[in-house]
Image (cartoon, rainbow, N blue to C red; front, side, top):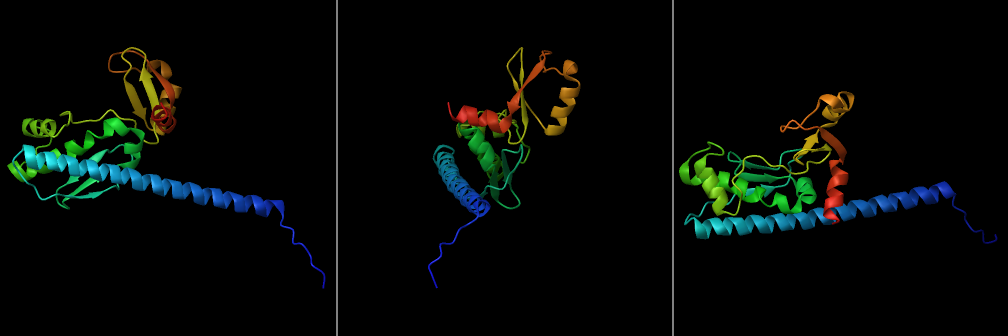
Length: 199
């Protein structure tokens, strides 16, 4: 028997290469996710420390999860004693997202200290601001998997679902911002966030 060199079809090489690239990408995503979670956990710890030192009050710390998706930035779930965060939104809005942490911890402290779940009342605002937050109920961050529109008048960004985006494309002359100026499509939120993160 002679030595024969095995030849591998080109399609098999390409598919093997593709599988390796996909595996490498998913590992990178897992590694990046691990880094982002670590950053957020350190920030949660920092804000809880501010609360303990500055508010003269030591709440039992809530557990943290990273299960939130879509447009929801954060959640203080009192029944589960858990804070939830949106890791993808954090990646897309690195600086602005850090205000979500004092926001959610302020909900926790308002309940623990004052037994109120009244939401964004004056007590909550005072706690949020003392923790380094901005005392606002709603965020204006880039949301994953949305279409971004910008107002030509005031420059406000609007995040639209794909369904709303298609409706706007169909009736574009009738769509305006709250300031009554027209809004213009500037791209997908994922691409927009990548551009901002690379600056």
